[in-house]
Length: 164
Image (cartoon, rainbow, N blue to C red; front, side, top):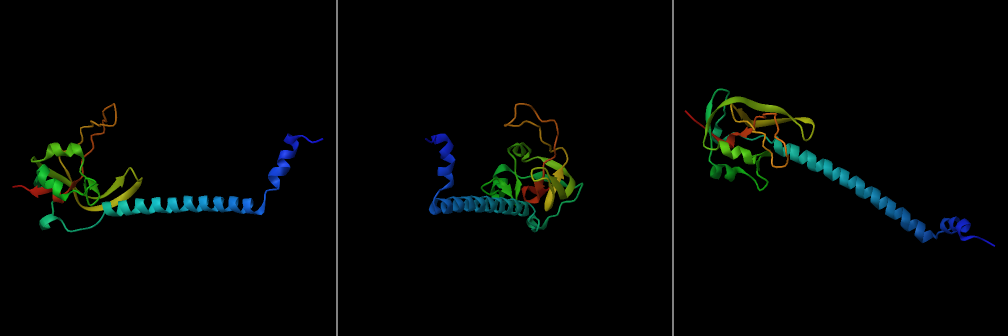
């Protein structure tokens, strides 16, 4: 007399050819799907990094230098330059930056290279500046506590106009 528990392994080992073929095909398709997902994710990451650092001529041929006085354009004017994602050439215009619209600032420095914390790599850019006194307040909508880093915003030259 035989027990089902001792014989069950024999039943599993004697699967038919079609079942074994189907199982191996499913495993292969899963492996291919994972590889394609990894490649697409890497391609999307590289494309967004390239969009953030796309080189183009400054707006209206104006190049700002440290010490220049500039005025941040109005909300309406800035929105013309923003894509549906709220950025210009990959540089996001954060909601908190709107409070600086219409105000005058001095250019602190031009940004050519910066460390992208999200991607953990050095990125190159052009036509971006840092303004004196235009810093993040640290009030985040997503977090319960206030951030104390006091980061400077990056400003595209399209969002600024020269002031005398």
